[in-house]
Amino acid sequence: MKNPFANIFKKKAKSDAPVPKPEAGNKKESFFSKFLKNRLGKSTAKGEEIIGVELTPNEIRLSQVSNNKSNQWVLDKFHVHKFEGIPSGGTVLENPDKVADELKIALQKLKINTTNAAIAIPVTSAIIRVVTAPLMTDEELKKAIDTDSLWENLVQLTDNLADYSIFHQVINKDTTGNTMDILFVASKLSDINNYTDIIKKGGLNAVIIDVKCFALKSAVDQINQIAGSIEESNLTAVLEFGLDENYVMILYENNPIITDIFIRSQDRKTLEESNNQEEMDALVRRYMTQVKQAIQDFETKYEKRIRNLRVTSNLPNVEDYLGSFRKNMTNTGYQLFDPFDGIKVPAQLENEINMKNRSYFSTVMGLAFRKLDVFGYYKFVTAVKNINLLPNRDNMIAQKKAKAVSSFAFKGVVGVVAIIYITLFGFSFWQITELNKKIVGYDQVVQTHELKTLEKNKYAKEIGTMLKSLKLSQSIESNKTVSFRVLAQIASAVPKRVKFKSIEYNGVDQIVIEGSAFSDQDILKLISNLNNKKLISQASLASMTLPEGEQQGSQKMKGFKIACILESA
Image (cartoon, helix red, strand yellow):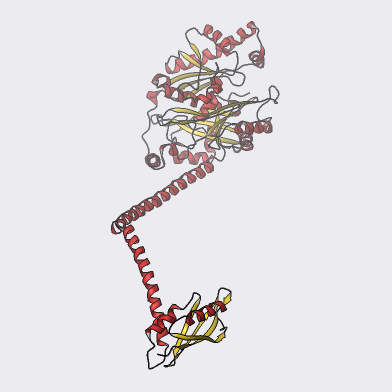
């Protein structure tokens, strides 16, 4: 199999590679980046939240981290879902449906707040090289890449360029030598699409596709940053030792120098199941010969001493091998790398990571530390920080950027509306305060009004009675006024449910009363009352009718005429 790390690094010495001055475009981009960070927020400008997903043939690892107010990394979500059903030696891409189903089950156990997923492909599925090219501006580099002339001249691939998903990043510029170093990372589109299909079927959306060695670098960078060691940040050596991948990665000035370690198929069998000490010692000797050579090459070229190697491994008996490593390289220390060192772990997740060897979680933690670089925050950082082999990443990032800007615009509109509402509320509050001052004593006014209304109603009733009496008096047509006493006696004789319409006086000795009553009994009662009066000698019913249209409820009023003969004077 072709070494994916061939010619991985050709970095010039620091004195030979002065940092170029920023170009005008870079200044504009930096200003735009600062503007976005100030307006949209630092976290938004640096990238969207993601969940790290590591797929293996026997388990799925999920991790999500965040920063708290103290700028400390916090482990928000973490879960390892173990499963069976894939035969020994089988791969993820050979069993896509099985892995996708298991991913669904794993996600059901986590309440994630994003569907953005960062995944990593094995280094055996990637081509990783650092190539030296003539110094070019960003526009010239883009034009050379668009025409495929750059990669055809600098990278010899066995297949057509169109069959690959390619990522590149300028990691060093040498203005003195008029050259620049470009990191070239590529993978077959068929493999990339198969991984993204698995993630999509599992219920997530793949937005970052990294390579495992760079995911490991991300984890190491973050732990170094947390530890605050300048020396370790500038120079860290990592050994990936296990059944799947084996290499030495030296992180020097934040860029990786990677050397592949070759192991035979028999060696893999020994690592997996052998307890034969002789076989294990022979494997260690072959393995350490390559490790020593990689370290010596680096120390000779850069005149830097490597005293410790951080080891990541998925072997259950890795400590037995580390003891043999230390015996073979007595002047170099070997220590298992802890990707959770310095990270705040909530109590409910402590059992998930409570194990002696936590180094094999380095890849998923490195993926969890990634952010989706929407606004080009890392574009001009001369270090490997944003590997992404997603084929349609430009369109995806454009959509995410539009969404972020739309969200910002929406928040701006909401803010303006909120300001308007606050202003109107303040104005209304001022108006209410002023009106309250004007209605001091309102309750007293209402109480007085109610009392006066009662008095008004009382007087209105009395006035109505008086007006009715006047009306009746006006109906008497005579040139001689009826004695007040006669009228008073007639008025006092009126029972309830009887009302008068008119009183006619002939001027001598007779008064005719016309009115209506509810019943015959009411009319008879009136006649009886009149006959009992001293000034009336006789009262009798002259006529009785049922006028049309007069009703009281469902009962009609009966009309009557009563003739009253007065006592002679």
